[in-house]
Length: 198
Image: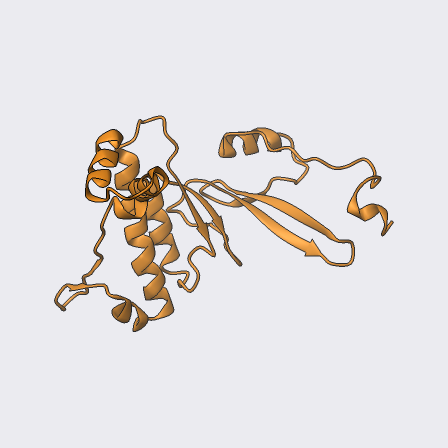
């Protein structure tokens, strides 16, 4: 199929170099076209244009983008082999969305069987719509030039401190995360940026 796409593009653009042909054919932004439609109770369905999107509240804007994103990811991943990962990565995830809507949106990722990798401020997943989650709360200490990470686990019922010294916490983390988390702590500051400040 790729060979045919290259041949077709070259036929309509005979002066294009091989590099230009490949760049055009492999530009995935042209592979699919999506039109977002906005359906509100009691109103006619309309196309979600940039202008219409700008008129929405912060939460409505975010929801209008996340819902089709999850649906599109599900549709594309469903055409892949069953062993392929179904990951969606979001930066500043669910920014501006009220806590009363987050459980529904997060539940949608579970419905679509999507594995979420998210970063954000004050982003704690503790909703009954999500069966499990791992949080790394990052703290930057400017005085010591270090960043610390606190691992917390949501097991569908409660948030647990994975570093608490109770028996079995490594097994719990492995069960919830699918991997056994490890930490690397340097034995000395020799050869590191902290050597000069020690």
